Amino acid sequence: MADWPDSEEVKQVLDVTSDDWDPTLERVRLAAIDKVKRDVGKWDELTDEPDDMLAQAALRMAELIAERPTGIPSGQIAWAGLSKDPTYATLLSGHRRSFGIG
View 1 (tube, rainbow, N blue to C red):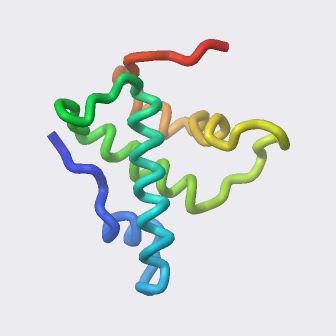
View 2: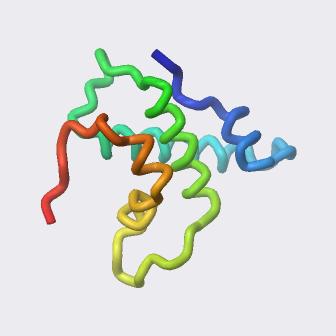
């Protein structure tokens, strides 16, 4: 099993060198991990652990969140647009336990 990405890994992917952004990047990191868990569905904090693909999916989601993607129509939930990223979707492939309706 792998570990979720840490703050330093997120900083490296985003090419952030200043410590001034640490609180913001920590929020981004935690939001990305939460997003992956929600997209997998039925995540059990006591027994589930990320594998390499889920850890990388969290890192990719952190990157997407931090980059503030455009192209999400007004009125739509931003998460839905982020989930359609092909790299993120590939990393989650085979991990989903529940699927949204609609």
